[in-house]
Length: 155
View 1 (spheres, rainbow, N blue to C red):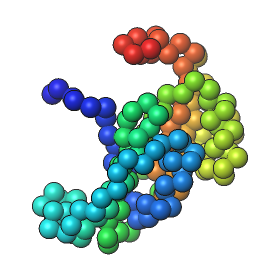
View 2: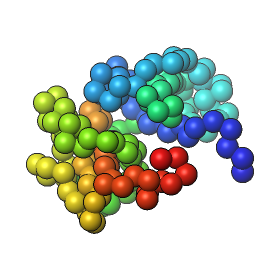
View 3: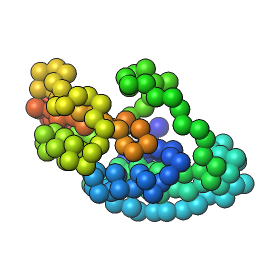
View 4: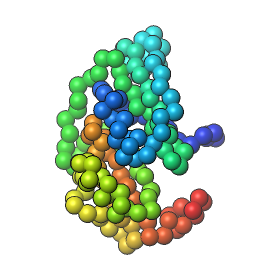
């Protein structure tokens, strides 16, 4: 497979408007598209039995996050307090330069922090924080003491 653009992640939500401030104001993503896919095409793709809306957001680094809202949202899944106990768990990871500043901003904005009150050192020089967006989707922030060792291809 030859990938031609940066990775895009899709997040299904019953309410795009509720998620937009989290991804735009808090995480700094910019809206780059907003379309509605009609019911016949939604069925053809296997995404929904009804039409759905897609809002594309771009991170400051160039990746894209697609927020998808079906016309007829499904029921919310039962959530566990522990991420890996959630069936079908998936999350987005942002590699950041100042995890303390990110955590401070998350706490200030009342974001639900899953990993405790402070950053967690999971191995020497690798710190992380897990939180939830307004829908309960998991977001991870990681800071490496030596990002060049982690990603020598781009650092």
